Image (cartoon, rainbow, N blue to C red):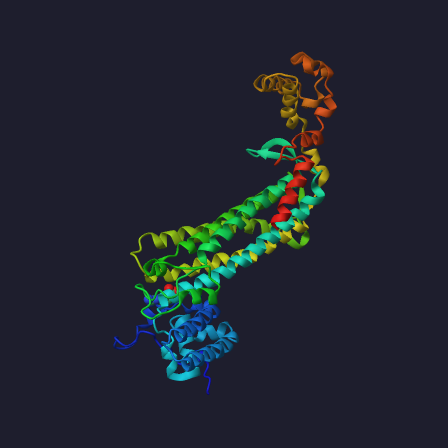
Length: 468
Ligand code: ARG
């Protein structure tokens, strides 16, 4: 059979009968979603293959017709596999469903017109997009896991690397660099939990809902569910065609993940600056300035921070899209895919670059240690007094006075003469002050689960490895 180029032929509409003439050029340009939804071609074919089989099983089609349709759809898939962007661009069809049906007609002739029996583009597009989204979620999940692995690989050699932690971006208490790295890995593990939960809701099959009221033929929807790898079937056809909660949910997952990447990025940007100097990004993940030869910019991290705004925009836009819609399918819903595809594409570009930046960055162990000033051990001094039986509130007060004394003398807390310590609290008389000012001891003291002590950090790493 002759196989004309898809772009070279006139498009066919799926709804021409009751209209005189074709839509205006302006209307067509607005209405056409093929430039966006052509990416659903594989899912559209898969859904149609399953639908053809289901129609055959329901004896709506003869076995011959069903198998002709299936063979035709396989041939259409073969043709679409070779489509490049120019061919997609040249195709004049309204959307991917229209294009597939037109090509099917070219392959098998008039019997193609039987495929859409009992089906609507409303349940079809929801099915295609959910199928696409299920696969996208799996890809994102594995990229997030790669980033967790990168954080773990940096954490392993840095369990005893001491650095400051910050609250209010003011030096707080000494921590292990590994503890900081793992804090980001745990946020990502919540993202993966959200992906898994979202996956369950995305995996609900709308096919068999028709345009809105359901399918009038005895279609086995459980068969369709099984065939297409869904977890459940929708229970209400009206809800099934108008529901895009799952798109919003994916965009929320992307936004939360984006926020986590952004916060990790912000830390790395700060820590890689000359002022902090705790880490150095590899040359392969840094960029230069066109003007200032000395510059070494953390562009990957800045883009991570920037993309988060884009994901949030997609989420907010989608919620706004949904909020005023009357029940059932409305064409507004065609817009859902723009934000969905964008978020997935961006995450697929971003996540490997963030993972690469993290796994190739190096710590300046000396700079990290030098930034831990003795005042950061003030809490440890108070804790010492608590162990000597003094109520914490009182201990806090006494150490506060020591800090003030050091400030007045213009020395660091550890440089205060021992007498001043004893003057403020006699319990310091037999204290090992050097030990109290040792950041590593401070770390090791925090050995309750979840703390920064070596044992706790190693337990975290084990737990995390288990999740990977
Ligand atoms: N291109 C449409 C979309 O993405 C397909 C569904 C069209 N349905 C309709 N009743 N016109 O939403």
